Length: 636
View 1 (cartoon, rainbow, N blue to C red):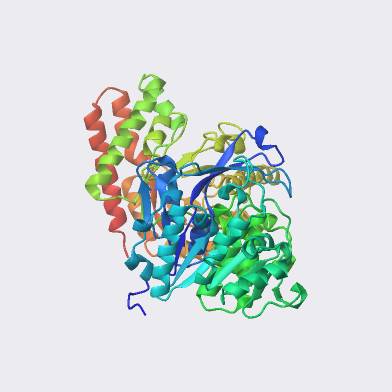
View 2 (view 1 turned 60 degrees about the horizontal axis):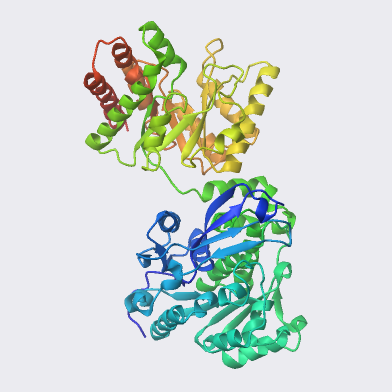
């Protein structure tokens, strides 16, 4: 038995690809106009799904040396999958799959896998010390269809047996990937083949766990009668057999196969309305492995698997639809009362907030999403409005230099607009900056959106851009004013939930009404009562006692809220310093988001021609550094 430390729970070996899912539900694949890009491939999905549920998973495969390969690598890494043995193939492209969702029973798909990277894995890619470091190895059947990948699988199984790993097989039968149908027929799930049956049976004895649908056991057992096929598989292996029965659940066989499925141990499934069955099997496998590898009962492991499958079939995509551990446990606690998981508000929220790609700690945000204020500065200085984009690019230069000089990597953020700051947005996107951009029409009350319908705007936004919505709201506004503003904020929130963008809600009490801490607290209570749960809040400085109340309020309503950033409102530096000190004991306050207090005076001087670019950048940096120092030294 191996003495190698078991640092991994699971190694997944097999297909990993990019899925392109048609977004027009009900359309023919020929008529799809837009596609959503997701991580895919059965093994990639299982690595991703098990990682979301808390297992330390690893991916053994190849991806191409191009954008799609890097996308898969980054997606797996973001969710916590070990990618140390995800090899970059220098010659081949990453596999693609194009899929459509026509109706409940029709899911056209095309595999683009001709000489693809993940089918180029070789025995030399399989390292013994790596296999030995895991508790389990999961293989998918596709990799048994090619002599080279089959040899790599057999080597991995040899090492797994030597070092005491649990070995699991997802039969994952796709006739097109065995060359049994035309290349465009990815939808066909079963074609009988003696050759495929023999090649599967030659390796079944290596596995401790074999999972498949009835049709997949038909191909493994060489019979289209399920019981006959299972009995044949049992002749070859003593491993546990898990037969998936769709909405009926699954049956588990640890010993002899009974003469009827009615006599089998069946763990019932959960009935939901189906949107997409294409990821159901990978979701089931992910949930099953959570229980199996944690030593839980078959009843519990199958409950995880059945519930995972139910959640994923009710959603678009596979990998992104996989539940987190917290979400899955919530669903299992009340699954019978949730026939439409895709419409359940609690599950929707948990899925949104427990599967985020990025968490943030301390933030030092330079806010220069201002439009009307900069327009006024330009007009007052007699400058052309066309100079405003140049101002924003210079502010970004100051932020970039400050990031390096102050060591703010991972702690810096910007608010930038698309009206005058699109070039800045383009430059910071993809660089691990915290980026938020506004949607409100400057100064509007009641709230109006600058560029119209929120849904049409977000289609073109990078997902990493946080939607910032500033609303001048007061809990003592007229009923008409409150309802109008609340309705639009709700639409913005729901659009973000649909698109996957995070939402920052900035609250400023109008100057015409009492600006008290109590009224800010009442406003937050009101939005939570409406079911609006922004990922971020942006609020003015409050008293220490009020911050304590706000923190309790946020944690009560949404413990997954990222936090709060303090706004500046063009306040003097000493006022901001006092405000920072009041927030010092609140873990919910993550930092500041200040603009005009930093760039206001330098911008006026630059627009008037009184200072040059370097002087402007220097003044911005000095003001920003002062605030960073004040934040770091706030009374603790």
